[in-house]
Image 1: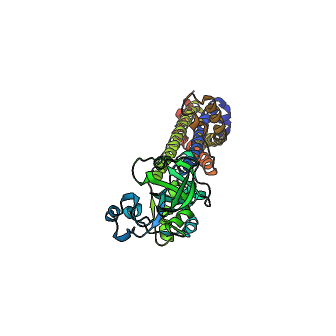
Image 2: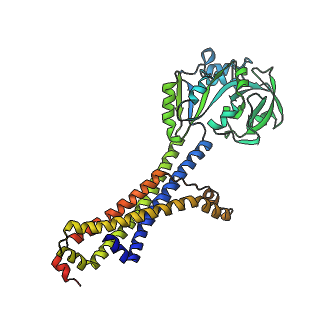
Image 3: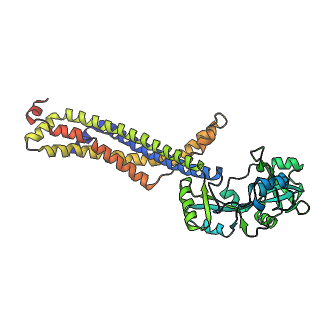
Length: 420
């Protein structure tokens, strides 16, 4: 009877089903956009942010000869007074933090949730006789675990076995060198080996040690600092920013003698991504509720038109529950059809959206600043999202028929039969 009633009023049934279709399709599309945006955000954060976890020795830094500012002033400032890597300069002023064994890198890299781990050794050295801070890095993992250097000229380090060096722009200017120049790098002011300047980077600072920093391969820094197989820190990135705290806790508990420090920028960005997902879901639910009101309205109109029919059914022995079943069945059929069609439409739109937005953005390139961002719009349709949208459509469509069905079952049969 429910099926026959819906077929008799095809136009109204189609319009009612359309409300559910739009709501379900919108929820599925928004969920797919949210999932795609979350994946893109994670990738962008991974590439844009520096290491969000820094692993260092758990013990306090040590200062040569009793340390601190007194040694710095006696040593003649950053230039140092003793002519050795441990006799003055940066090490005496800032302290030489206790090092870590380089073998810990592989142990940390094996921890669940770790995307990349890169060792780094900071030590005092000399370039062309002047004291500088040398950062030894592993080129193969540095760009994965840390934000890449802001190279303004030339290239970054590419090989661990090369005699290449990358200088800060301030240091290069003070030394009067450029990309392709040769400098002498060593543990003291009077000796050293020849290195080729392959790149110059912007230190984003005009004061402090950062302006007198150079990057060389890790093995070279270990040799200059006399720290074979040692590192001062290990930079770590998690698979996703939301795992930073979990990964840091795992490192602290699984690796003895280390302390994992976390940054906050990725956590904030992850929270913003979660807020965006919640917003999309709320918008989709509002659209689905609007479709539910359409079902209620249609069912109420159907009851009004079928008052005599309801009275006849009651007069020949139909119980209140029978009347409710008829109208609830109609609402259920509307919900099922609307949900199924809505899922199909939602999946189709989600799959077509990346190419459609890419084409429109390409045509608008140069006309507005957001074209490049829109062209990178990505969607991701998952089975759980499809099931969720399908279930919501059926449930909302069915529940929307509860009140109209109850009203129909409460009709007085005598009064209903008098209705023309």
